[in-house]
Image (cartoon, rainbow, N blue to C red):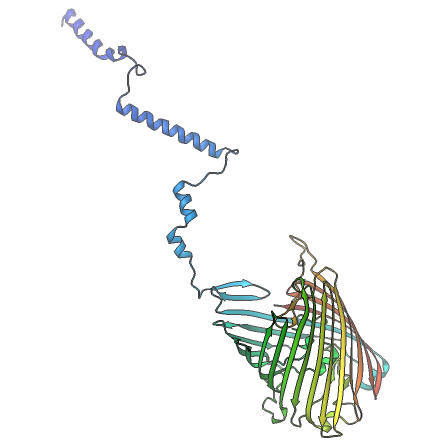
Length: 481
């Protein structure tokens, strides 16, 4: 090929290849559609990177949900809401001084409760007492070991089953075991089963909530739990309560004498009033009276009491220690009378009761026995005694701060208490004896369900066959829920 021809071809190649470079630059000419799309994508990515950098910056505010997500959160997603809706019959489980189960509509409720008390007692007595009846032995016991279930069915039906496994009998004893109908117009509640007769302030107060380890001496007269039918209610915004029932004497049901024809029947009633009530129970005056007419049907019916220590023996009783005894006379009719009062004024409380038994016998006619107690307590930590107006009874103490050595520390509630109680079981030829008790107590409420108690009792015993003093120191560890 000639040089001239090669030159022409080279010039043509240079024109084709080099012409674009010699044409105007990209900045000087409009971009193509594809180039414009790519540039827009790059710009959008740059904005997103800048937004992410701002969100990751420590000084930047927390990211906000996208508008559509935020709207779903505020209004609630329909599908999620339907999944969250509960049936009115579904139970919720929670703790309120005990384990409770309750439906959303509150038509059904179940409470699981229990009580465990372990006691220790130490005795020191005068020689005269020791010479006649022997030495009181120091000891320990499980005073109570109970489990109970209670609740309501369809709002208006109540129930409770409580059993005690303490003691050496090897079997569980019935305590409160009943069913009832609530919300009856005018009547209130009608209860059928085995439960306490409505007599006495301290007797009706739950043993987990009483001020001292044991109830006062005059409670020897108060009836315990029996099988019966009782109606009760409150009126005037719970300022008045009343209860009345008819009972068959059975004691701690079931027992060997449940069908005994000699046990007889009783009618018992109680009325209380709150003439003064303020500060949601922080200040109040409670008064009440009770009466029970009993027809023992010739049964053996004696009165006796321990010196406010369950591990001690009965030093005063109408059923032993020589002379004519009450059981020699046989019972025709018994009338029990009771009066009660309770004053709560902040951390200070005063309480007292008087009880009397008029007993008609087949031997020398009527015999009268009586007793009373007065007590005072004071909370060093500022709490006050709890009180339930609808029942006319003291309730559970809730410390301002629970005892804890971890986290938020607290020391629970501390209560000091003093009591004097007396009982007289002497009347003419029946010589049951007389006794006066002076009791001092310290109670430490670790929380609403745990308590430690220390009691010192000085018992002054006066019997025709012996007389003297008995010193008792006792302590209790209690779980109650």
